[in-house]
Image (cartoon, rainbow, N blue to C red; front, side, top):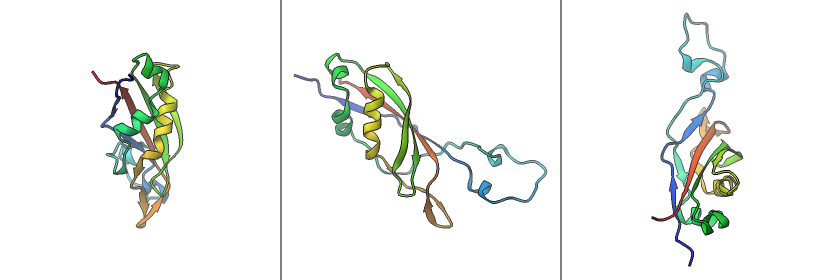
Length: 139
């Protein structure tokens, strides 16, 4: 009998984006704070409309890793669309390598939906979400 899988989603999410203030030229100032510099990254709490569940993690858990009782983690980076979907996702890191945790994390990304960034009250594409996904077996 296969062990039941307990999925754990990390509680810290990172969103990186260029501040909207950079989209329009600002008048010169004596000293700009670091957050107003081009390509600045901000860490903000994710505003989720929907997140993957433990059942979703169980569905994508790599078969061989499960069979050999291997746990792992994958860091996935995705762009956030104006619809709040994760797009153009890539695996930045996975451990242990070669066990399929990166591919499993990518398969999980359609389950995540965010409230998108807005400009003038309308949703816009923008931001990069970095999402650590932990795969754990029951103890």
